[in-house]
Length: 149
Image (cartoon, rainbow, N blue to C red):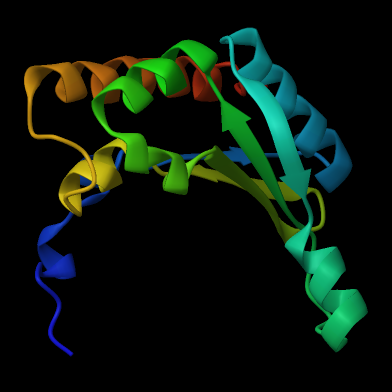
């Protein structure tokens, strides 16, 4: 099967990728990330550990890995006004995985940008505004993760 787009031509900025490294234990990092996103107006209605589930169900022996399903109500409402199918990509996930003991990676990718790339959101100014506003909120939340103070 041939893809309709060439993934090698899509960069991290096209996907709204955000990354951070946290020097703390896994449980502390999960709390820290949750608090950083809540501070920017996100709720976290869904959260789970795929690692725990896989370790239990298929004896996967996975390192700690956690998903926070974050949702900013205003952004979600604006997005649904423009594209009802965007709900199939909700919520905006923020992933925390243990890189090594005491070092956690935090990762987010913009569903608003991806939805546009795959044709599930309109190519108009309203959607560009939603993607930009959501991106700014995520950038601020990720900036809240800075522990260098």
